[in-house]
View 1 (cartoon, rainbow, N blue to C red):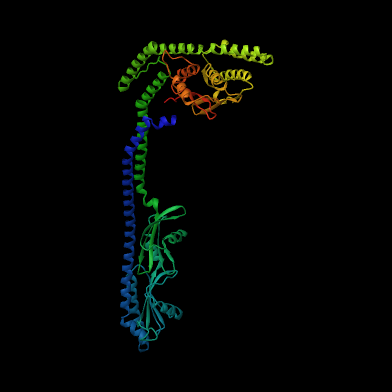
View 2: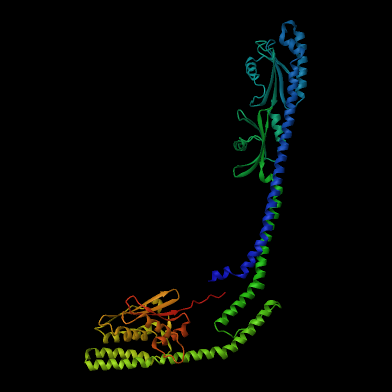
Length: 576
C-alpha cells in the first residue's frame, strides 16, 4: 500500500516532471560537448599529420635534389676519363683529375645535411674516391653495392638509412663491367637528429619503419616503438588511438615513397588533449550543478508543497478514525493557509453533526441489536423444556445427566455473559454444545459433523448467537422429517477478507418456492413483517459488518438448505 501511495505521490510526479524538463537541455549539452571535443581532437590530429607531412616533404625534396646532383656526376669528364682509359693518363694527370672529382663530390656532400658520405668506386683505376680521400678499391664492397644498383630506391643498414647508387653505363647490355658506381649514403644519425627535433617530451616518439624488412629508425630506441608499431602496422595514413602498458597513445602515420617506409609519430593522449581537460571540468561542473538544482528543487517542493499536503492527508486520516479534536495551522500566508482554515471549519461542523446525528444513530442501532438479540433467548428456552420433558417422559435417565450438564453450559453462556459481542471461538463452542444436545436427542435419526475452527477465524469478534439459531432452524425444519438418515454439516471457509460459516443439511422438503420466500424475508424490514431467527441474524450481521455481510440461502448438493454466514472484515488502510 505504501508503495502504491508513493507511486502516486505528487512530490514524485513534480520531481520527475522537473527532471524531464531538464533532460533535453542536459542531453543537448552532452551532444554539443561531444561535437566540440571531437572537432578539437580532429584538428589536433590533423595538425600532427601536417607536421609529419612537412618533415617528410622536406626530407624527400632534399633527397631528390641530391639524387639529381648524383646523376649529373655521371657526365663528369674527369670521372669518365679516369674510369674508361686510366692508362692514357700519367700519375700526375690522374691525381689532378681525382682532385677535381673530389671537389665535385665535396660540393654535393655539403649540399645536404642528411648525406653521411659520398664516393665513387672505379674498378679500372682500382680506387675509391670520396669527398675527402682516395682509398684502395674494395672488391667485396663493390660487389655488394653493385647488387643494390638493380634496386636503387632503398637499402637499410645499421648505420646508414639509405644507399643511393648510380652506375655507368646504366645498362649491363652495353658493358659487362661497370666503369664506376657513385654511392651516396644517407646518414642514420642525421635522420634521427631530425626526428628528435619533432618531439617535445620524452614520452613522445617518431620513427621510420621500412615496409619490407620491418626495421625501425626511431628518435628514441625503446621497446615502446615496437609495441606501438605492432598496433599500427596495418595503417598507412591517418590517426588512431593505441593502448600500450595501460597508456593511451595517439599515433599518426604517413607513407614515404622515396624511402619506401612509413613515418609515424606517437604521443600520450593526455599530453595532446591536456587543454581539453578544462572543458571536461566545466561539463562536470554542469552535471554537478544540475544535480544540486534537482536536489534543492526537491527539498523546496518537499518543504512547501509535499509536507503541507502530507499534513493535510494525515489530518484527514485522523478524522476518518473519529478524531475530531484536531486543528492544523500553516505559517505561510498562501493557499495552504486557506485550505487549512477551511479544513478546521469542516472538522468543527462534522463534530457537531456527529454529536447530533451519528451518535444518535449508533445508540439506535445498539438498542435495535439488543432488541433483536433478546428475541432469540426465549426461543431455545421453550425447546429446552420440551426436550427435558420428552427425555423424562421416555425414561432416558442415562443421558439425562449429560443433557442437563450441556444445558447448563448452554444457559451459562446465555445468562452470565452480558456483552453484546463475543469472540468467534466462544460463539462456535456454544453452537457446538447446542449441536451435541440436539444430536443426543436425535441420536438415532440425525448425525452432526462439526469441522474444527481454523486459527484464522479466532481473532474475529461477532454478535452473540449468530450460529446456534441457524443450526436450530436446520433441526426443526430440515432434519426432523429425514426418516433416520439426517445429516448436518458445519464447515468454515476464508477468502482474503471474507469469512464464511456454512451450515448444510440433507432435508428433502425444500422446494424452489419456499427457498425464494425465505430469501425475500431476510431483507423485509417492514414493521408488519414477522422477525424470524434467520432474519434476526441477517440484520445483526449487516449492522455490525456492513451491507456485504449477512446470510445467503441456497439449495445444497445434498438436497437440503445451505445457509452461508458471511462476515466481511475490512482491511486497515495505510497512512499516506
